[in-house]
Length: 200
Image (cartoon, rainbow, N blue to C red; front, top):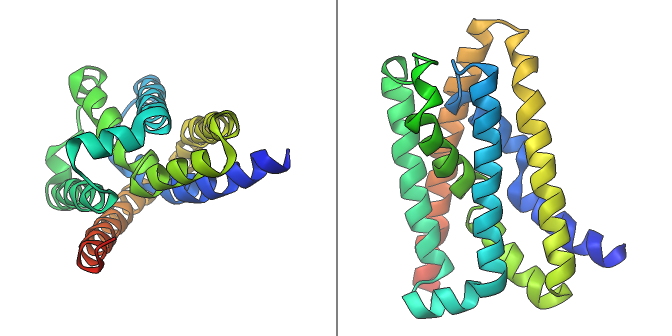
């Protein structure tokens, strides 16, 4: 149990499901509950697949492709920055037909940016690699499954709380979430650039 907790807690902090919830709500604003539930499952499945791949073959993949975690930070940060800017400026022209979101567009949002890099981003990838080296495959895998189960639970029931507060509050939270998403993106890019300069 102690080994599990030591592997679980850093990953819980890295995934940051509570901090990601408002961003998830902003990205899925206007979607019907059924479409949102499918999105949650798809995002969690994508995050799990990527995390397991990183757990068992992360170092090999990084060496083969010649990339570093700093490259991942900058690349992921740029994607999040673009998405947040588009959401802040053009939100009224996007995701306003919930019926249309049951197809490909909702699926794309589930994979990027919710599954990657919001749930499993550079911080989570780094934590998984460190946990694997420190505690082994089994405790790390169990902690990953538990963390993703918490993500599904929070993402499934969290939006219902905002819906009860009314559409105005929901839109305000969505805008604030997009602003925080932009700040997170800039922080990721900055950390990646500083890491490159420091030679880490």
